[in-house]
Image 1 (spheres, helix red, strand yellow):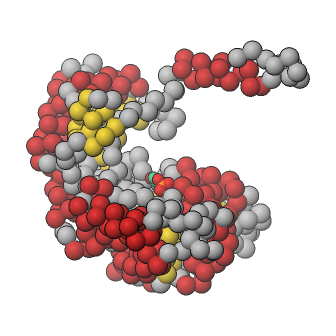
Image 2: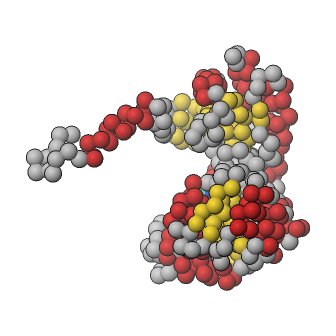
Image 3: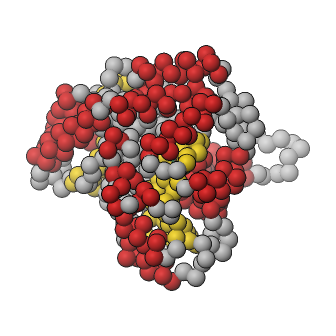
Length: 405
Ligand SMILES: *Cc1c(COP(=O)(O)O)cnc(C)c1O
């Protein structure tokens, strides 16, 4: 595009094509693919059928007949859009019922239902702490927690991944009156889990609040998939007033949106002060009805969770032999996220392409998303995978490992 004669002269907008070209030159351009579900865990990807190991639909509930029916029924009864913020007329009876059911499901006093997880974290953190307060954040936390931390203008202390000794030193040294510790409960790239009882003990000792993001644990961990807090309930973590539990509803729940749950008083504060809640159109009732149906499926149909865990066990047992002697390593994880660390970027890409040629969609994750020299495949398993799907993946990985340099 040439510049307008009335323009003020050279503009930073003229640099954008060059900046895009620089991204491309550094192999950092991201491209989307247009997809459509096929049978089971398969997908049509740009017109080609592939077996996907990249979806966070860990229980396969996005395709569940009762969840689909609830969406249709919700649309019939409520219409499609919610029409307003929850503070005005957007808080449907369906959304209200869902909040009660979510709180009950995770065993906390009260829950608040949001239209998206990103908006939840980016906005609840600044509602809790501000200038003069202190934040303590695990180095591998999700981007939306990091953005929430920056928006808050509180002082940010980043601790090395899972380094609770460093966290303790930081808490000890901080003179701030309000301290907030933020952590993924299940880390999204590696599938490893935070030590919740130990985090909570530190928070108790240092008068801090603990915000846990359980996007990858809700529906997957704990009895009946009640999440990472329920998984450690015997330690009393759930009863603590120092825990704020956040989870998303677009992963294992198979729908969309998120919620935050905790004590009555904390949730009331967030209801009053969270800008992405107060100033955004409420999640549509048809989605709330879908999540309600998904919750019933998670709670009452143990087959989904059982299938997922059988797939995880089969994958972990089956991968040991193919990768022996390759230098590849599987990160310890009992969650749906299985990270196979390959090392060099080009090698990880080569394996990804070999799998793609075999009809398998497994994404490679490279620096800067993960540390230099630890390029990996992020394998997402699901209840939608059959035992044969997992066997197909293992076989393709074995073939790729044999041809590895
Ligand atoms: C996906 C994800 C989110 C964002 O949730 P959305 O509902 O997709 O916006 C937040 N935290 C973690 C750890 C996630 O993986």
